[in-house]
Length: 82
Image 1 (cartoon, helix red, strand yellow):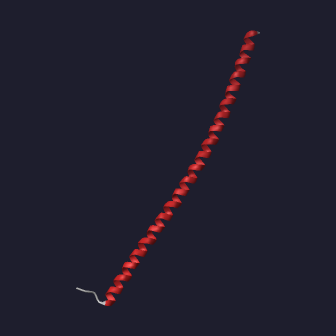
Image 2 (cartoon, helix red, strand yellow):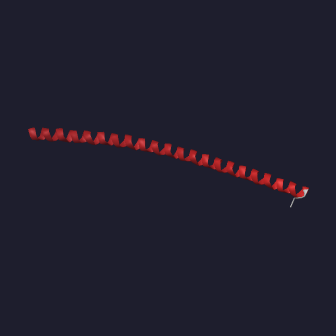
């Protein structure tokens, strides 16, 4: 069974609409995926900066504690000598 000329035109229009719709949907999904990946990358950078800050904080705190411990040890040695 063959289609009439009008039916063929309608079929072509529907096929073109489906292909265009598929293309637009794919484009939107790719755009959203790229946006999400950029956001994840930005969040990861922020987390890395926070971790670096915490590491430097803990290192400074460790140095301070070591200094206090060393001073206490020196003080205790001086007391024991007197």
